Length: 263
Image 1 (tube, rainbow, N blue to C red):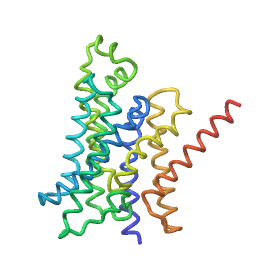
Image 2 (cartoon, rainbow, N blue to C red):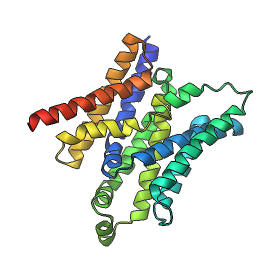
Image 3 (tube, rainbow, N blue to C red):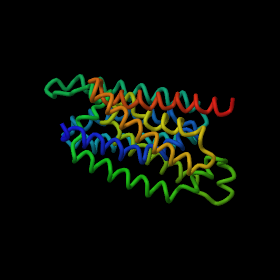
Image 4 (tube, helix red, strand yellow):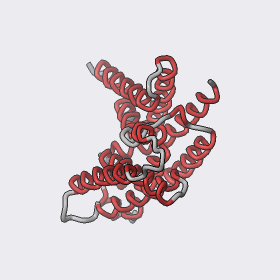
């Protein structure tokens, strides 16, 4: 039993340490649809990995990074509304992935595990990947913290102050791509952005500084992982969706507590 539970717990907690602070920027910059588009492209990475017979995790990461860089560059064009392009790319990449996988009749593909994740299927090798990716993303986030905050407050002012906006946007997309590729096995393609958005949104009403919100978002993510795993363990519910449900309950509780405090 512990051989299943401990890797799942470690992997989920490791992921919460990076989805918390990165999710704050997703909430502040209203980038949830960017996250959805990136996550949907992950299924195309699965298909490419199987077709080319390379490591599927690396193929997912490469696919997400490529899509993330494309999205960052797309933000600079003015011909088509960004939300229109995001909608086209999100649904097209998901559909292309599903169609490509349907042709692989000689491959046994567990589509449900890719769509909804399987936290209890994590092994210690996955945990090492998650922690290595989380450390890389946290180091990058720490180096970019001030420029990301300035860019979030006012891009024009940040440019005047000498910050490289395009480079910062590209690196933010790179971090989001890395985290989504890591989180995909935990909650799947369809729910992966919930780990970025919900803990940060739950932390927002109780935060008076960006750093405090990032710390509370990490704590919210860890709570969601522990509560979701407990729910899955005792009630035999799907692990990934249970983590998202726990995060949602925490979000509702934080909204209720915030209203009571200001009543």
